[in-house]
Image (cartoon, rainbow, N blue to C red):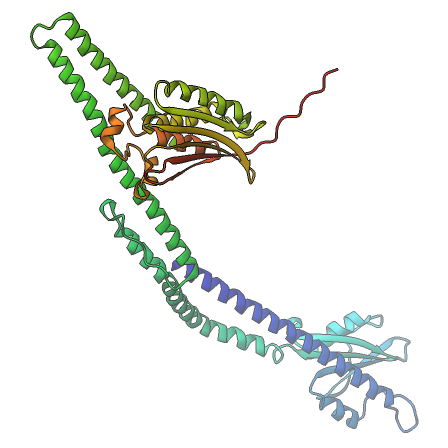
Length: 465
């Protein structure tokens, strides 16, 4: 509010000064116009004056003096006549005295000296009057008008400003304070609502609308931020619980195998079996930790991802061959159906990793039937699909399958050696390439996973000479 007070004082003071200066300038202009008009009237009256013989006289008659006096301006009329000795004699007439010779002037006095002498006699201080000098034949007209009456308005405005300025400033400050308080009241409500939200109450939201469009937008942005924070917080808690559970299981197994191997005399075969189980669990833990590190790096965009054109159909064919090897000896047919010259914008290695993960899941959970890898272009995107004839996924599980450690059937996934990180890593790699990973599935009718990447034009073949 101090800043508001300073701004109010400066604004009102500046406005008052501008008004006073403007009134003073207008008054000065009116004064000069009045004096000029008086000089014109005097000049016209002098032009009409002549004595009964038709000769000019050195003194204006009383009638002329009365007419000039009625104009309300202070004036002096001078006339120079040659003296008997050849010198110049100067007389002046004012409305309140007869003609009088200015004896103190030398014979060669110029109009400037005459004006100075006259002003010392009749006008007073020079700054108090505006003096207009106008030659009129053998006459010299000097009109002096006092500035006081004309500047009375400026003085009155200044006096009023000195009296009313503090009251206006106080009133403006009070009104400004009320307006600011009223304007900030929605912001204060939002502040109190945010202050009441803590780690245990992230489900609360700021009330919206607030009555002010801009504050409502801020409240909505804060609510969206709270939703993201709440979701991340719940994911973090879930991740902590899941990671603890996933790490506790292999660690428990490792400790049990080590204690079993060390407890009593074991044969070499039993010791090798225990060591093999320990190595298997250690390898599983290693893969889990590597996956978690990869996800953590992906969240801070620390994963090296190239975005350049690459041929997607050879990548799809290569993954199909690997999937066929994984399905060897099982009643599963692996098919590959990709359009030729299918170019995508992204990272070929990460795309291969995504397709391998999807194909491995399809082969793992398909008891019999077919796994199909297909590719084509649509609406400026390259679509790489992995379709299986497995058990499918229920709708309530479909969106959560990309969460870390989430399993539709945890025991079955753990039996296959999975930690529930593969699909989360696959979606992260798709996002980092500027694409997206989608899932479509119905129970007992199989699943389809779709990887969409931006399409890229095929390279222009270089001409050989």
